[in-house]
Length: 464
Image (cartoon, rainbow, N blue to C red; front, side, top):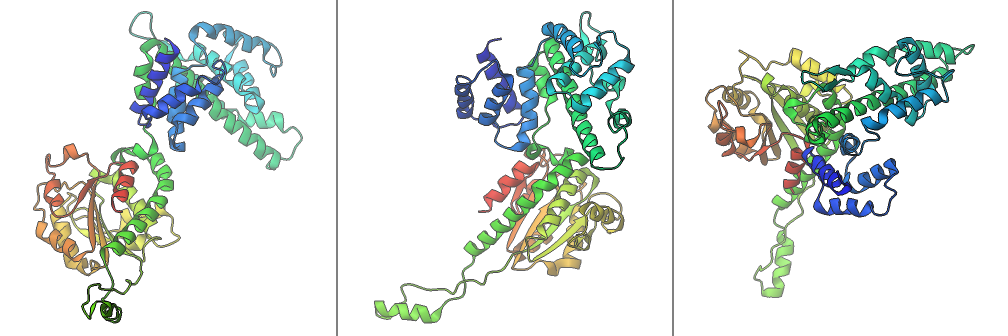
């Protein structure tokens, strides 16, 4: 495969993985290849990253794809590198044959690398260990299956910490700064070794099955494109960092829109004074500036199991929005509604607040989502929460188990609010399928598809 083919394939793989790369940026990267030393792989990586990666969140996926399209080695070079690494390792007490040495000796060698091995030594050792422990015969003759877990199970680097501390801290006090530094070094090198193993496994699979095939499954979407309905707990922890800037932008947009949409009262004195220039005819009217104030926000959130991951994200958003609005009231519902504002007091831990909300809030009667009854109950119990200063934000998939949608109640709530929006975590193609009444609700207030952070950001931008 020529360099041009690899470049085109690499750029295409980045786009398919959700990393935006324009034609101009692809050309910039191609121009950068003309002024760097192509034999220096890390310079090549840096050139591509500088021209193609726009956000830090895109970098992990970029690195995975770069290692697939521009591998550090191929299987044909692997045996020689592994032998060289084993025979000339500077930190080894004696030469070690990585192909035949007992597992105990390999673990001792890994322990030495984890305390001070270079990146090159760790990568070479990882490649050798994948070649020894990472393969299993495939059903197809002549093919191999490659796995990271078998390598990690054989060497168990996470169990080496006690042995390393005993060897390194001989005669030194335990629990001090020296031990903390050693633990940090070993932890960081263990993560690097695990990533080196995973990288070499992906490279070998790509050689057997094709780069394009493994690229489609090896890279997770960037954080801002992960579907809210499929987020994991780890994703939610990372999303918290994205929520607060979005909350500030949402508050700012609603405030701007409010200022543009409303003028102050007529300034009679200035209007009459200006009319003297036109013979007493008030050709120009003057208004008093509106009184500045933060907008008020009411959030109505579906917390049913069908959108539980989306509900967790929206509750994170609610928690962040409390800092941006002068007054925020949040309500959760399944088939009845309860105010959940009390769980998001300033200074409280958001995870603890969510746990309390699940256990204490009264949002369930029979356990089946019912938007119509929830809207009716909201209007009955909390109708005074909606007023001329209020922005109403409804978050849910509009699936009501074939129950009456209570459209008149929703129209009344929307009519009393200043702004009203509905964010739906389902793709537009799935609206109005099954028990969805998305279009009926969408005729009452604007409904936006909001499946990830990128779409939420785009929605906020439309409020300008």
